[in-house]
Image 1 (cartoon, each protein chain N blue to C red):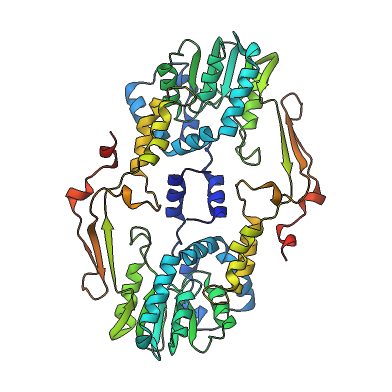
Image 2: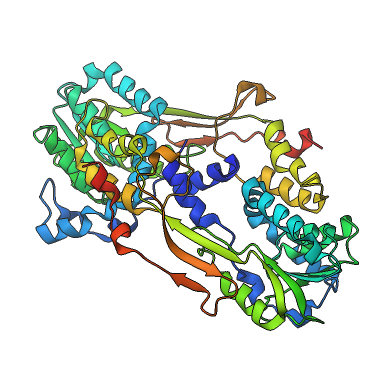
Amino acid sequence: MLPSHLNGHSALGRRRPRLSAAAGESPAAAGVEAAAPLEEHDRIYFQAYSHLGIHETMIKDRVRTDAYHAAIMRHQKFIEGKVVLDVGCGTGILSVFCARAGAKRVYAVEACEIVVQAREIVKANNLTDQIVVIHGRVEDVDLEEKVDVIISEWMGYMLLYESMLPSVLFARDKWLKPGGLILPSHATLFMAPVTNRERYEDSVDFWRDVYGINMSALVPLAKKFTSEEPSIETIGGENVISWPSVCARYSSSASIAIILQLRNSNLSLQNTKFHQ
Amino acid sequence: MLPSHLNGHSALGRRRPRLSAAAGESPAAAGVEAAAPLEEHDRIYFQAYSHLGIHETMIKDRVRTDAYHAAIMRHQKFIEGKVVLDVGCGTGILSVFCARAGAKRVYAVEACEIVVQAREIVKANNLTDQIVVIHGRVEDVDLEEKVDVIISEWMGYMLLYESMLPSVLFARDKWLKPGGLILPSHATLFMAPVTNRERYEDSVDFWRDVYGINMSALVPLAKKFTSEEPSIETIGGENVISWPSVCARYSSSASIAIILQLRNSNLSLQNTKFHQ
């Protein structure tokens, strides 16, 4: 019922939050694979409740989940018999993929309360010999060994929105063996000017005649709203009005992890320029 | 892209807020139809920005807006030549409807910043002789006369969610002439148990097999989420599994405005009872 740009906007804020309540907890107290005391278990079992929809949304994003699954299977020879670290494992789905690909051991590290369910999922799938679920921040946990592979789904909107990449880089520097594998190892952020006549007509021109009333006084507000609010949605290629331009690259091996190549000439394009 | 229950949930929180920044402003300072000083005008012109989508959503709700338009035209003989008070006029659309129905004068009262645009809309439609836009809370404004008609769109989700009805009743007691008209004058809230097998399968059963992984550990969370979170959506009649029951009535003439008739036998029905 809501205009799509409102949905998109709210989605931006609904992406999984980082750490929150779990941040203050001592990872030493949580322990490696230690079952939480019963009362603790009861307390936190339903705390993941409010974020469940986020995990559902992420896993149901087939492009995302299928890409991880394909990447793991493509690197199966490198994963088989090796040690993997899953940074921010969430429900543990990527850890299970790695275990199925033959990993000797997977350290599944998660700071949020969903870790309780991740541990149960590991048990239910008879993978406790392979997967070690750890409740804590990757910056704080203490592994028993260095790892051959780091896997993580750290990407947010606009690639970097979640601010989770620094944790992955920290884990790389502290726990990855020389020559180890990071999945994903590269990322490129493209930017392109787009138009959306339908949206514009529906949200801006709409106000020019509402039930026969001239409501054009709202047009400046609507333009501001349409052009300045972030909007997460899928659009057709016909709405992209120039070649995409690379504005950020990430390489896991680069000493400077993120190279921003902002091209001002492209970024100064204003949505409104194509409509006025 | 988001599950519909997430959209619905967020919609609940996105409904227009009441008062906020404008609440502290003296209505006397805003004055009746007085143009705001220029710097004040500049300051507040774009403050309505963040709420524009809410007005768009409300006006585009054709069932809602058409019902108000039809009610005003049906009562045209009572409105023609009379004085109307629009409580919480927003963009002023209902005030314009009343002016077009022949009202001698419409007091359009709005506490939020959108009042700046409402005033411009009145001017653009050459209705300044009929419509007096007033920036302030209806509890604080001082009208020059008693009114024959009060109109207001005070209904929120679950009828009462916005908590705006008390303002309408206050206006009735203070400003409505004896025998005056209130639109709407009656409201009835129905409640009925519903089922939604598709939603249930998509959000709860989904976890039983995710990419071949048993994620049933998430089923209790998913059930809790599905049955306890409010969800605003349109469903088909085939999902309503019992006769609706009246659980609240509002009558503008009743000395006790709201008569809650909670029927425990109906309300104790749990969504999950139909699925387990």
